[in-house]
Image 1 (cartoon, rainbow, N blue to C red):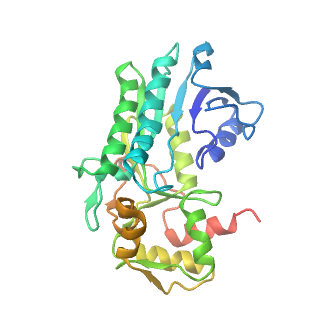
Image 2: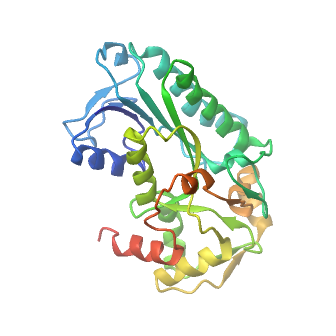
Image 3: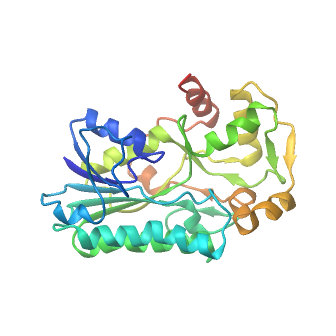
Length: 296
């Protein structure tokens, strides 16, 4: 296939691009500027030069978006987070000379809002806070591709766990120092997914036309945050004695602290119904696998 990708140098993209190339697909990347991190066989286009892309695109995979937890949510930051997802998606749609046959876009379980004990599947109602506003706007932009006849797939990602970036890279230093542990009561849910299963879902949906619409992409075995802390510390052969008070996180991060202090239980109902097989559904095994495969 001829595949167009945005966010090719991000956490998911850096693993997805070589995987797709190994399967014989031809990759074209939408970039802010020419990026030397990409293999020379990857054609690169900026938004300005994308008008020159004059060939059929089988699939557009939309991974782009600034990190939601990289900076506190000031009003300016919120605008940047929305623009990096919705504006970019819309500009690519309007710039392409020919619409792709299919479009696969990422979203996040933040779509359901900030909760502690609630349970959600794809058919559940959501709560209207900033996380929901951001994800809903992103999904709305992706759905515009469906309006022009593209088969459109949206994956609402949980916390993606992998060896080369993402949440674990941010947590690992403190856990390695023995400073990991509960956040508040630790009773909030931690809806996670192994990077390998994200890659598997994306590659399956390239050609399997049963994939259409919105899917929760989380492990079917969600755990409480305190259980995650225990398993992750053990995978690093460290204790998990510390408790981080909620008020400290709110003082540091403001509204963004809800990403850490709240957590709903997210069920990947549609993937289960479709017979998707998770390679890593057990958290303990997944964390050990990630640590064992971390580059030295």
